[in-house]
Length: 269
Ligand code: MLT
Image (cartoon, rainbow, N blue to C red; front, side, top):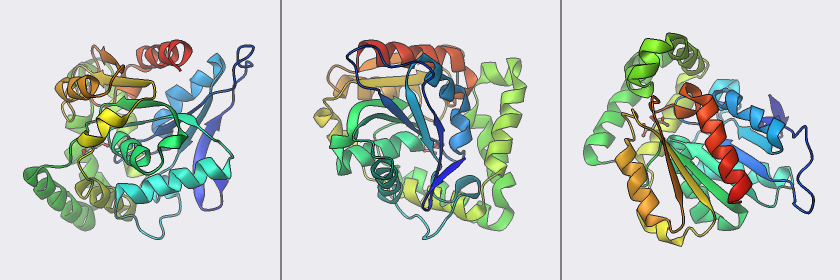
């Protein structure tokens, strides 16, 4: 893990030069809840195909500094702007999975000039429903009273798709380990940010950069219909539905996920 001031991140640098006449592209990937930057380890391999990959650790997750505590998706987005500025990255293909997608849309609302392209994976544009907010309140109480392990028990059955549970149970255990690496404070910050996020649907028609939307066919948290709706609302966007993957499509089908992303980066960005 690298550090820049109070920010921590993973970075993989290209082992091959950018094609002649093309500037190097940075791909910045924002992790989902309640995971951490290490959930993007399979995507760091995209550096072997010529892209610089950055995976910021959201504030407080996996031992990164957690102060001041996060209350909103804009707090996380501000940290990512600080990281891009600190690394002198003028623009990037910025994307995220699930909560990372909520933060990607917040970042686009705050600072669209950083977007050379966008990737929205297993996410949605809408704010939480009243029922969803109730569920978040229960999870806040759960993490305060019983810690990260109880959150892992509650979320794992929904995070990972049915095919993965049967064929690759080690991915479930890997995901549990990622969740257990974070403090209750970090997890509570993520919950507060998600439950207070605004509806980003009105923003979608103003996205004019190349955009890739990816979703696991078996995603039970943000099902494909929500990706299809974003695809219809973002002009010129591409949609890829990954068979045999659930909500954690990048971990469950890393090769298919990377191939879709590499095709997008090569032909659309
Ligand atoms: C995530 O994967 O980031 C969260 O499960 C998203 C959510 O709960 O809305």
